[in-house]
Length: 77
Image 1 (cartoon, helix red, strand yellow):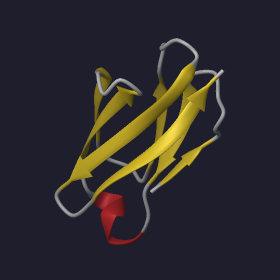
Image 2 (cartoon, rainbow, N blue to C red):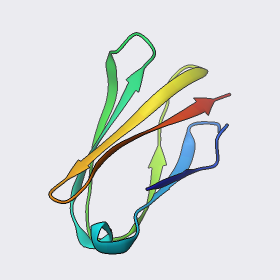
Image 3 (cartoon, rainbow, N blue to C red):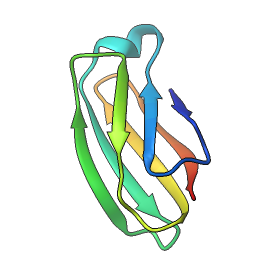
């Protein structure tokens, strides 16, 4: 999984690769306090454009699907 750009303004791309590219996913965005602040379903592609309206800070994108689970950190300016 790639997440870019970081830092960003709340608009970013998640790109899946390999065998995981064709799965459906659940995306949770979690703040530094551990609170889930955004949830979204991702399906039908290997590249997803995400629009997030959180306050500036550090966040974690937790992606989980049938064959993949992972976390990437990112910064919102």
